[in-house]
Length: 471
Image (cartoon, rainbow, N blue to C red; front, side, top):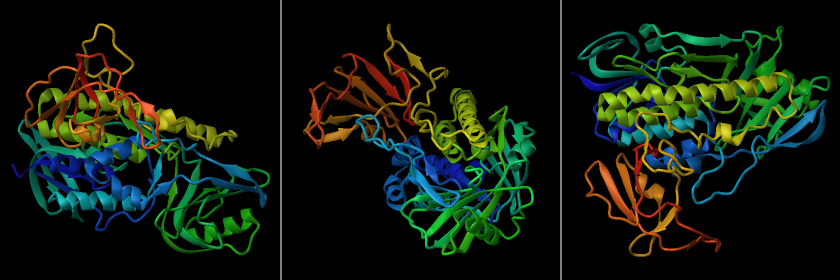
């Protein structure tokens, strides 16, 4: 066996999976056919649950330091300012949700941060290495790479919407691509435009037809998006965007320059009917592709990897079997939200720019129906086995304030015993006795209780921060 896990694809999904495996000491290789890293902003919206995952992976501080909040959008129609819009209304952090708002970070920078973290753990992406084919047997998977053959216990296809792994596996990618809708996306600098907010310049006769420009944190550039009509030739993306900006803004002082990335986007809404076949798994865009509405594509891929990593590291059949059972319903729901938001936009709904936080922030992902979830209470409470374990501030035996997330952070399981003795800890399970000590004071003086759990309750938290058992 050359390696335990071979990962095809070094985008956010593959990189998160690599980090999850590497920090558990699992031997792996991660290959990518591209000779250089992705250079565009594409998936630039990070959802609150993804920020919690990044906290656990040890990259949150760098992500927060490199990005910024979602800025308001100033709308102009027919050259006239018509008001300010927000995709989401910012909310204050709470004890159980420390990162409640989406965060904007160009995808290339997210990947760079994850790639550097993976390198810290001793694993480097093998660039310019293409997976050509593979076959599997009861003992493993033999993959043919452009650099030679490799034998692994498991193969994970995180190689995007055109996944070679998925195609070779013969898994159907059900859905549709709407060739009747196209949009030009690009990263470009703009002289004369305020970089502190987003801008939409719409046509007088059709406010939803025009050009949008969203500032990219940490860069002088904007991410531009412009719907394309049937007679628009995107062969010259910079020239096309400049013409559309001139036409819809009514201004002559706004000049586009230094375009670094562009693509023509079409609505592509697809999902596999299997996330696993034998020793081969699919994750991220290889398993489901989303329209950008809702900002769920990259984030759902990160959640796939976060769910799969600890299970691959353990290797038990029960855990490996649970990956598809848990992630397929979540991916289908996310795809439904993205598709509905796209429909509202195409139909010209007046609030098409708005996002339903509950549908997009991914804090409500639950695996209650998973075979791994067990709730043994006679009367289950609001929080159930399978749910995301909420954060909460506590005080340790020395009176120092800590968070539940501090206890969860790392590759281990966590056993919380509320006002009762916990079992003896093991290398894989960290145990803590949690005692009710009355209200705590936040820095602003607000009082809140540390938790609302019946004394004597035991809660087992999975390595991915979801509750496995309540008893």
